[in-house]
Image (cartoon, rainbow, N blue to C red; front, side):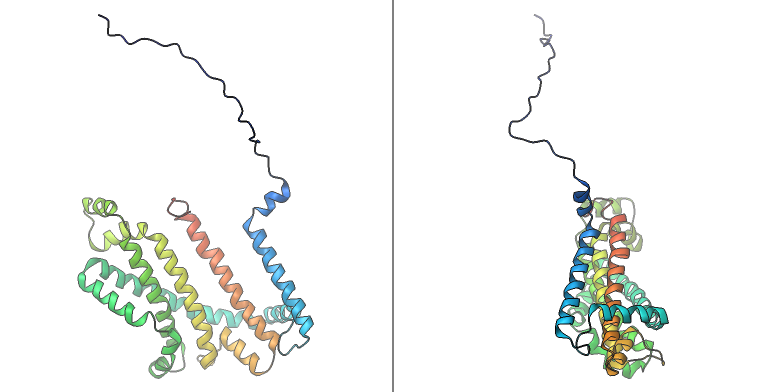
Length: 288
């Protein structure tokens, strides 16, 4: 008795087109342009500028609300004179120092939290105490401890960055799968090498979210702090520029300073954080 299976002749079935289904058309040039996110966002900004201009002309009170054209003129005058750029750079210098210190402090706390029970209790207790506390509320204490200088600003800015970043980083560490943890331990990774080579890459989306939130908190806190006590060491930043022009009733310059605050936020968001996400977590398939 033969056990050879029967041989069937190969054949191919032609596929008929599905009825009622149209083939996808190639997008036209206007449609391809509209698919670009920067085009849509630019149109939104132009629309907001037109609304601002129209409302300012309708109100016809430069002291309360200058038009968009007047604000743009004050903005470019500030750039041409160098005053607006100088004030902005002074603020960014303080912010960068505090931001780096906040990142280091958050990394130390979260590393302790994933390594020891005492570190977990410490991070949980400190975040419960200080995360709900507005950073600007610490400014009077900072002025008593550090005086009228950069030290006071750096103290409140570190508070703004530290807790948001620590909470997001620790949440990302907790979300790392057991498979990755066991793989790291099988390679003999412990302590700081385990955190750097396993936890940080796996928790990168949460870390980037914490960095973005910390940046926004710190930038807002810096402007508010400069508005409260003004210049540091005889030199005022962007918040002081806004405060000083408000006292002198140069409302167009006040709005120019606010526009610079918004532009810095947009530049950092799109050029720094979006680029980091595109080159890391989106490229690696960790985020859509």
